[in-house]
Length: 365
Image 1 (cartoon, helix red, strand yellow):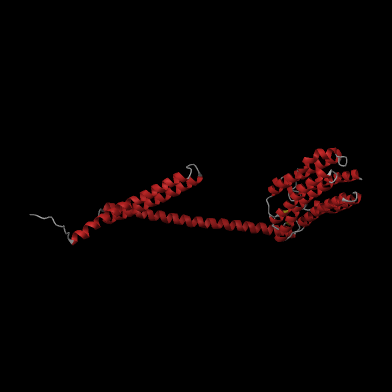
Image 2: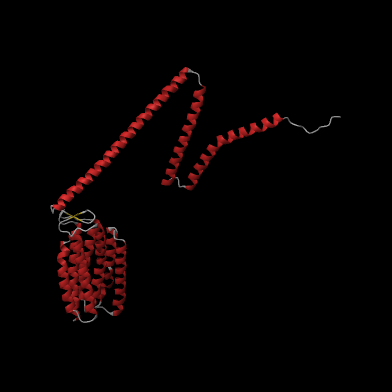
């Protein structure tokens, strides 16, 4: 009777049979891993990004470059293996010719890259030479008194600051007259606030623009200069609104001075605020009197004449702010440019408003 017992395998069977299967599995997995990873990346790109978006296109191009590089490496490895096992002289000669052509192309590209680097360096050097020559020319013109520079090295027209320098003593004299004519009490204090804001505006502007300061001092004076515009807006409203009834005067003055103080602090913290943001804030705050124009027109102390002057003065301020924002026009280059047009608008607006305040003061006497 034959009994089936346990089958005992030989040591050779234990050593060879298990080793062949992992090798096959490893080869299969290595051949499929790259394709699966690329497929997963491709799917992630298509799912995560909108195919029409810039990020999706950029990621797709990066993926295609990596895929092409990997394909080129794989082809190079296969070519090396094939070349090592090849014995045909014709194929070997063709391979050597292709390799020599590849080396020649690489040398040509390296030479072009070196030449491009030299050209770029020459361009950078030429720009630096132009800047130095321009700076030397400006320095020579500055020493000769032909042109002035601000704290940032920018050219200043010859009339920069002179309009406000002329207006400083005139504003001081007008303020003294208004304070003397104003009735005692709140109106006199309001005229003093208005006069102080006007003198600060014109005086600081003249001090900033007539002299060349260091960059640090220029930043400080610029912050004060822009902040003074908020103060002149609030200061101009103060004596005019003081002629109205308390139920209008109190909330309006609270709003206008709160906005002015917030704008002042903002400018002192953000000195290099862009010009267009400055202009938008100034115009928005300067349009606040439109809310009380009918009341000013019908008020006995203000009346139509002062109301018209207030509107014309506000239009002058706004026109100057627009010129400052768009940096146009420049009537006389080197003498009277867009910044001077802005200063001219502030002077015209101040003249209209100081006459309006004078009419209000006379109406309250």
